[in-house]
Image (cartoon, rainbow, N blue to C red; front, top):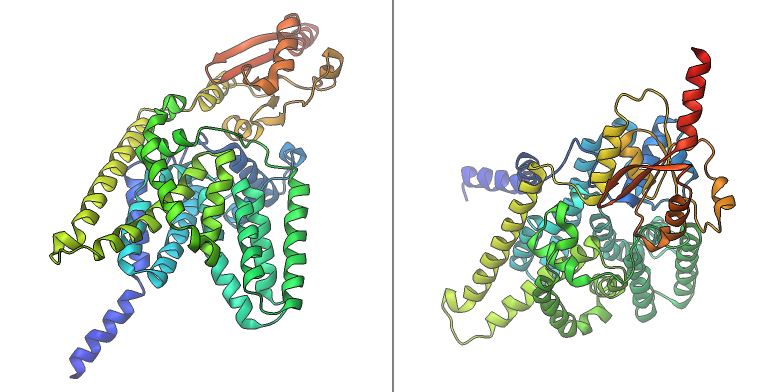
Length: 483
């Protein structure tokens, strides 16, 4: 080989190192340029993510904020902290961070699948996942799925390096404990990682002493996180997973999120059920496979858009591999015989995803908001021009603070009567809540009974804003005295 050929080969090898950066730049600029992310809007962010984000901004800015009186947030606030130190208060920066985290998660799944199965499977599944409406929605809402996927994909890498070090309390040991605690704090699906890790160590321990110490550390980390978090606030239980899969596959308009045709989720749900049955053996032998299968099973009890992304990820990566393997055993040796069904599946899935992305993009261009966000937007307009500091109690306190830039506290819990409610009225100007939520039934009844104290300021399908009359009367009396 001459010098010119050697030089060209060396340049080609160096350029391969930049392939991921090129794909990231192309994909990220595409999402931003096509308007699939609301980079300048505080709306659409999930309440749990908003809580973690506001806390990170509070710590980074060293300011007094009522968010510190809330329950302990999930550990995403630690991931948001570096971004908050450099760009406090920037929605755009945190959305870009979520985009990078999502790409890193997909890249790790690609790497794992390319090594375990084939690069063809990894390329097809990874490419389809990057354009899926489900993943784009999670980036835009700062959802839990990208961070859970990142932890799940890092799990086998951390475990392998910890075993290679052959040291009982190496850094990778504590890294796995922190990852387990972080996953559990984010969503009930996060329990899948420590459970799969424990099963993996039960079957393949380094030695009995190290196994015992690992179990003690893992159990302690998970138990402490569960006790500190006191469950998973703001997670809806026993939802409709078919509706979540329908939104993940076919996209949706945020304004009509509750009117999604749930029966559209029957197709991906049926494929997922078949795949889980076929891959049941892999779940017991591979750490990542076991984690994903357990996460899908646990998430059925608290299904949401994050669960749908986890299910869709497993369906794409494992389903593509099974589809390619099925074609390898056909009697046809032509290209269409070996890859015809695969190409057809790619065309159908990619077309479906792009139609869903177009629907979501058009909805964002039209200013579509979820019912909750529409209520908060109306409250923001109500408070325009108000120079005084406003304090509210809200069913969604973190989202309320992001939207209105005013102080918000959680709603009082377990109200026994009006005397109990009065303890929470001091210094409060508004109550923001959904009167049809069963948890708010006592508050709704008391507000309806005491119309001399409360008045309805805003009514939206997503909830109501109730103003306290005594605050208004005190301000009028003070103005009259000053005059």
